[in-house]
Length: 471
Image (cartoon, rainbow, N blue to C red):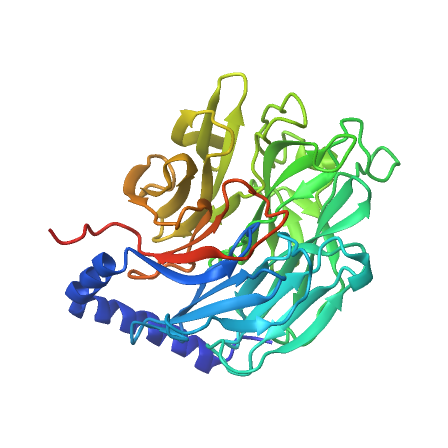
């Protein structure tokens, strides 16, 4: 089934209208930037493992979702045409669904995608609660391009802890990526596919697994790193019809004890097979041997492993794989070195034959108070990344105009968090000039993982800081 012509036409019309409108309202946009450097859109969130602020180009609306104190999902809808929030900021956040969990689990964040037909779909796992069936849930609003109205709900899968969901839409399908638990410290990465706007789904299929095809054993490799982490937002490359995926490894005797290495391969949406960045055919899934084979070029960077489980992970679980219009891959991530005492936001560029790993920013190693946040594509070879400077309560945005060869500082903004620490600072995708550009969540300094969440932590929307306030 192909995307209806009317939907495609609407997308093109929307893009054309936006470009024309930008020229005529540049002054108004500039005013909006300076007037809305930071707005609190909610104060009822808990620690967010990750967030996925999303914009729909057809309805020209941005949707922000977060998890409340008991696991309830809340959301805000911003209408760019009228420059206002629904519900209004002085009203309560839209509650998408009721969920009772005491205490709430920070892994149960909402993941969002705009389906090919224009409906916003939200997914939520129920992590580590056998009595609830480890359910992966799907929620859908009644109307396209809006979160208003009463949402429907259904259970997708319950067995083996389907967790860390993140979805991406192509022209006519939705791909839902998730992790599945095979055994205590053996976790694989899978995807399911819907070709009917989320009404039905294929059975999940493994696409990345540390099982070595040549050793005759299932999981549990000698190195013990048998957990795949690929939890960040995925992006579709419509020119080459593929979804690039980055992942890291974790494990070693016990769950998530150590973290190391960055890898990348892509899923071709034409045949739903996996390929290395150099086009090496990997079949239905990437094995441990294949991901470490120099011929596949899946290994982006071999990182050092932290000395003990009591030291901070040196490779963060949040990393992204993107593509330029010309098909060049870009992997952005955070990496730390105990040996050098440095922590770096990094960008690995695919040159066509190998990886060129560069540094976006470099700081002295201070726990996890400085870290990479997210990526946003703004042009054919243009990208922005957000960086969290928690120690100074600031969000920094850096940009590249040459596919990651060089980076410049676009903005360095102080954030009023009402005495909280910055947990996440995520750029809205796909890109649209104007406000909002970033969603920020917070947590208490003395309880980073919200083991006893009060659920009173601010959620903020911000501009990109590129226009200075009036003098």
